[in-house]
Image (tube, rainbow, N blue to C red; front, side, top):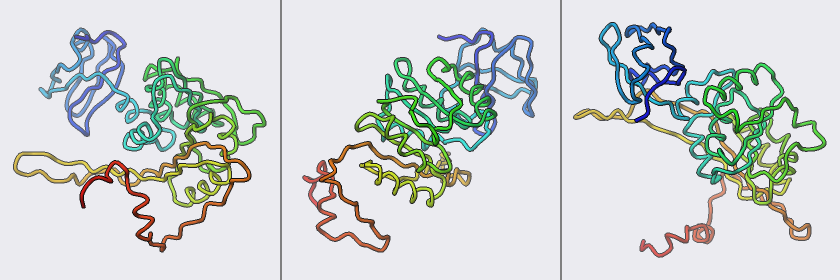
Length: 293
């Protein structure tokens, strides 16, 4: 069993709304409204064990996960939430050994998540123009213990003539105007590589979709992930009245190369256009084609 040592990170967990992630030190005491957490009582205990505060409240000692580092990261900008991170990983097939470029480091929460999966053989190259944001992101990345898998650089990707990376597996964009870096992202991606963008508004999606089609990207998908938590208690289970509302839209696309003589303009689909029966049949999942209706 893994025991807690001096300077290890610990998630002190009282309940869902009261939990604190910090580095333990023998000389430190943490004062909370549920009592004092004395760090010297923590060192030597196993992760998963519990201690009592001076008020008799039970605090569990949990080993932090990437989820905890993301949710407890210092924030200079809006973070990308786990509900979106999980779908990004699933949709793109994110895995160890991949090379990833991130344009717009922000608070580093997305950087932390990407590097936690790409490591130990992969790497994340992240670029931003705001040194204050970068300083905060650097602290968050160091706290999560993944600095060796991340290269951070101040760079305005919008105005570069030569891209810093090529043949990467994925380019992730977290900017207010992601469409402006689509040509640069294309140069950095390998064939079939993924382009991912974080877009808080639908206006951003519209402009981005046009730019992606103009730059020969395919397999476009635009999504919003919604999570609903449940209060599960014997005899009175119900959905939670607390919840995360809209956080962002996520755009996905893949780099392809279409011969000039085969290029065609993809027709726009108007919102009031209803699919005809033939198009519905063609879009059915082949894996379900044998299921009787």
